[in-house]
Amino acid sequence: KAKEGGRNRIVFFNTPMNEEITERMTIEKHLRNALDNNEFELHYQPQLDIKRNAISGFEALLRWKNPELGSVPPMKFIGIAEATHLIIPIGEWVLREACRFLCKLEKAGYNGFNIAVNISMLQLLQDDFAHMVMDIIDSFGLNPKQIELEITESILMESYEVIAGKLKLLRARGINIALDDFGKGYSSLNYLKNLPITTLKVDKSFIDTISNTGNDKSLTDLIVKIGRSMDLCVVAEGVETQEQMDYLIKHKCHKIQGYLVGKPMQEADITKKIEEQNKIAFQEVSNL
Ligand code: C2E
Ligand code: MG
Ligand code: MG
Ligand code: MG
Image (cartoon, rainbow, N blue to C red; front, side, top):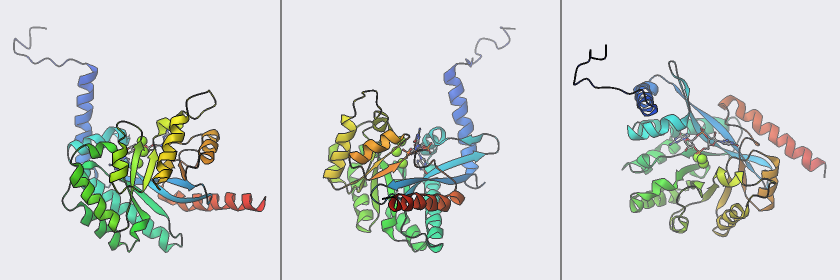
């Protein structure tokens, strides 16, 4: 039987690497039709403004449910969407969908909330990126101040000048710019100094160090201090425990995002979440 394939037979080894390639190809195949087939949805994760003890906005997080593959997490498909440039139409869809939702909230009387949208480097590198963003925001009649674009440091490694120019254009229109996952990977303070960043999102890995087991929290504290000293809004990512929250409040972080405040949720659950938080804040004030 071993002879069947002959000499020039190509042998595929069933190694984990091979499985990974096959999985990537399968994901890519389905990803190509995902937009047309309406397989995407946004979930929204609340951000708690500590000073007001109220929800101030949400991060839009992409969810993909394919009939064959089931739910595929962003970690598994965003990279592939970038490699295939599919992230460009998908990212545009994300922004439009997030703006549509924000517009709906406004019309329902929930005013002044912010929406943060994750942006890929490839999107930023598109010539018409700034126009595309402004057109979508204008088409829903939203205030650009309500929109925050989240970029990661990896974006900034390439084409720094081009990207800086576009960000400045968007910032001049009032759009907020967040530096996501700050502290993970290469954190250059030059970015913070020279780019029109308005928000610093402290990476979850730093929040994780806040626990009573004598971990070194000083770096987390320092990042919050750096952000504040540069007049940035400091948002803590991945806050899961009350202890972490207490530490972050004590060290003057502005906003909290994480499972403790709320998991990413469907659009339909958002207004309930806003009301719930308002009730908690009201009770706390009444008890004073
Ligand atoms: P990110 O932008 O840093 O988003 C935060 C991630 O942390 C989300 O994962 C969120 O569900 C998760 N998270 C939030 N709070 C907690 C917590 O308390 N504990 C834990 N363990 N996790 C928490 P998700 O939704 O799986 O997204 C992963 C990444 O995929 C995002 O990281 C972002 O880089 C990327 N992504 C998601 N949606 C989009 C999108 O629309 N466009 C682009 N370009 N990237 C996106
Ligand atoms: Mg993000
Ligand atoms: Mg993040
Ligand atoms: Mg992250």
